[in-house]
Image (cartoon, rainbow, N blue to C red; front, side, top):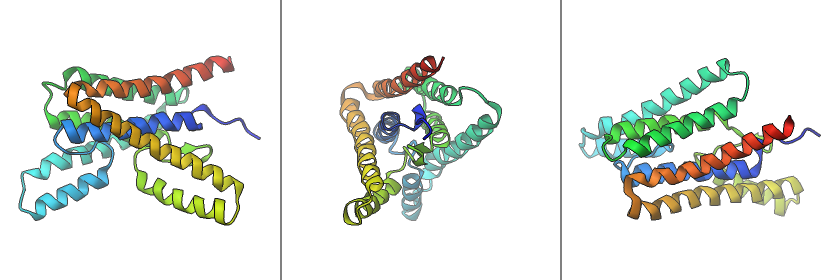
Length: 218
């Protein structure tokens, strides 16, 4: 049996999900009610606003949408160029973008802040796609919620032990995403634009896990 990769372990997925939940809460509350990662939400809000004749909302939602697409494109390009320590590079890039927004957010236009954080979210989604060898997304909980229900059925009603474990893992990921959003929702009341700094803690934990794992392999 192959040893589980550190970036596919549950604790790693937890901090990624908490980061993603925090990013969406942050941009929604602090930077004009858009989502950094949940582009489905941005498409819905764009359609609703256009349907109500709010044409000024066009750029407000299209910029994070296009920035996310650019982030995914950039990440895929970098994946073809970086052969070693890929996860470390991507997390460091995400850390840098969040740090940049944190320092300049009070004077940074909402559109720029949202674009940078959408790029960060896209790179995270592109690079980290598995949890314990199974398909995984840390950004969008709709698929995870569906998996939670099907894993419950197959694990507890048809008695598949692996599906029981998958159910528990998915429940923890959902809870982590919610916790990240909850934390940012609470802290935004007090720290406003600086709230993004707290999301850096989660990325720092992920970076620590990666570095620790690489040192252990030496």
